[in-house]
Image 1 (spheres, helix red, strand yellow):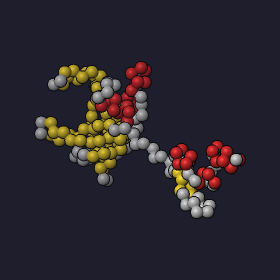
Image 2 (cartoon, helix red, strand yellow):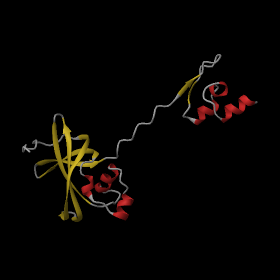
Image 3 (cartoon, rainbow, N blue to C red):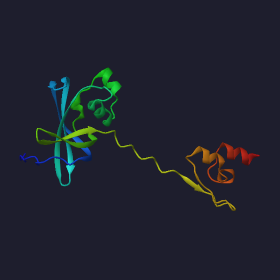
Image 4 (tube, one colour):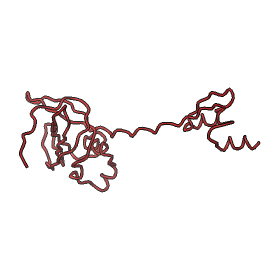
Length: 172
């Protein structure tokens, strides 16, 4: 394998889908706010145009509502309640894709990219099925996935997909 230097520079601020490249347990970390317990380091890889940029960030492994580690769990579709009860190995996150927001922070004159994990992208709803009545003067278009339209539409009184109400009406 040929060694290749990492691209220089900081990933621009914005929304990305990142891959978790690696993770490392750092232990307890002393900060100006006190000691952070069980800090875990993560390396996220994002695509910046034609270049890949690596972003290093570390989170205390806490499932508290405001913690970034909890946000990362949710971004990976992992239940914080499950983790609180059973624990988890962060090495299992390596290779997974996650939505992130990159923001910049300057510390001692040096610009750093930081990460906020975001919830997964919801899967699109299936397109609704429309039935258009061509019977007589009825030109009603009905979304058959909406129960209220299904029950009140003239289309379902004399045409379209049969439901229990239509079947009763036709039987009378």
